[in-house]
Image (cartoon, rainbow, N blue to C red):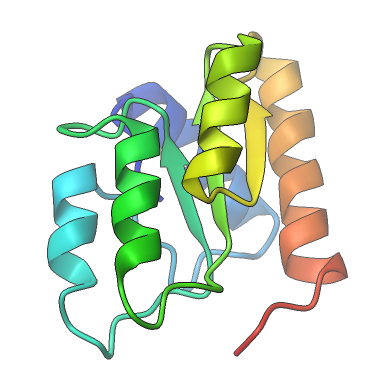
Amino acid sequence: MVEHDPDDRWLTEETFEAEGISDGIEFIYGADLEDFIQDPDNRPPLIILSMNAQPFNGMDLVRRIRERQGFETVPIIVLSESALPDDVQATYTAGANSFILKPDSYSDALFKIKSFINYWFHTVVLPS
């Protein structure tokens, strides 16, 4: 997970742990993700990133990930504070699989994170 906001990182990490999904979850910055995936053995099954994935914006980082061999099918989920139609469209055009509006309250955050976990970890079948 690439998230610049420490509060968002903390809430997400705590919710993942409460739902029993804490193994293998890394919380890093955009530049760290690029360094991490330089090694072909470091292919995460799922990437969650903020639209403000410092030092890149989310769309640039999505494009850069999609250009890497072996990352064409890794699901990329983008979190954003913007629901502008142009931002949503540009994110999908860049290659994201999902666009989620960041929650605006604690209860909304819990609902969205739990819904996310249910879908991506218990419902969908991901490519290996």
